[in-house]
Image (cartoon, rainbow over all chains, first blue to last red; front, side):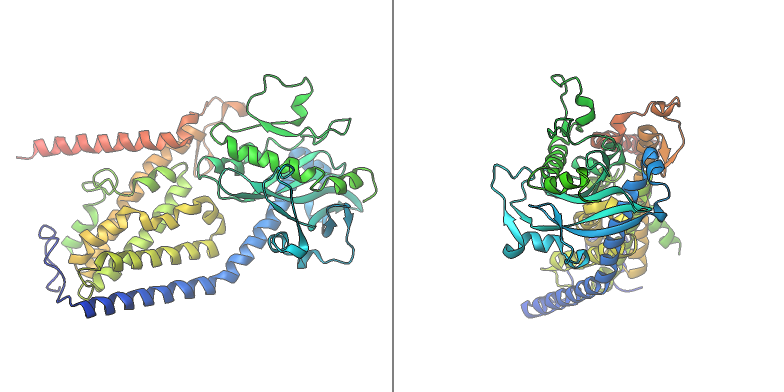
Length: 274
Length: 207
């Protein structure tokens, strides 16, 4: 074919042609430029498609946690006849902001900007997120006018990354319908087990609070010293992925607690918000 | 043509990238939990390997010797990023399963290894044959390991439940360890040992 098409044995032949410094720099620069063009173009061209995928994935996920459990499917009936409705909640008072558009709210951005967020004192910052948005969009699932479920976004630090997900609660604002992890950067094959249905499937049916209103839901490995009625509030951790599981447990506790959706869930449970 | 076939088939068994060249082990350990990810990863590696071998072989006359590794890795990294972006755009579900391992193809030694050892000194057609052969060799091993791990670890193949699980009323008690990361090490080590035994035997048999 060409002078370079030698046999396999003679392999590593003498170096390529005359290598002057100028030529080396020119060729290397040219290759780098061409490659960076290729990478930039592909990233820019494909970004809208990827964004759309992420949006669809989030929606599919909300629908999925609502239909996964057979018991729940009975409760919800055909999810297609249910209406999904996004509303904005003001966290401190737990009231719905009628004048705010949920679609216009960028959760990541509003948690970062000083005017739309607040700082969390370290001792209360169970989810280790430092700042928290004042307004958060939640999803109401209604069927024939009755509230069947509320889906709230939750996030927090796991072992090495921020874990994001959605928590679906039944109309009593206390029974977990499902938990889905949508985004994380935990160790693949170890911490990433938190996204497996085998683990997220442990959550449906668990209760957040006991009859006295005490927040009891928790994730743990060791259950020797548990109270007799603990099973309702306990989710088993995954051995090897303790930090990631604890991270999820802490973020659930934080987001349903007083600094999270606590006031809002109180109003839903009390029948104030339907 | 016979040389094309020879270059293509040699890396599949005789000079398998994983069991003989011992390249690309990290990704082989990581994505072999199920057949589906093993296949997807092999396809991504094949795409990058063929692309980089072809381009590097085309440019082998102009790539300056002192900076050849820089040029090679730049080309490889660009191809990996483009592949990763394409997968994220057109197969988002797969992209979530493979997570960081697609971008880690950059550090998969098979790619740079073949570029430096083969594409730099051979023609385009031969380099493509070599790339395909190595990709097939990689696929073969990943398939074997993935099939064993998924079948015995989960009782399934390609996500289809073949053996009824004991916890769902069947008879099959899955071997949990095969689903965990260490199983990758054990199985790949077994395959390396096996291939070494076979090669020694055939070397002795030959005059």
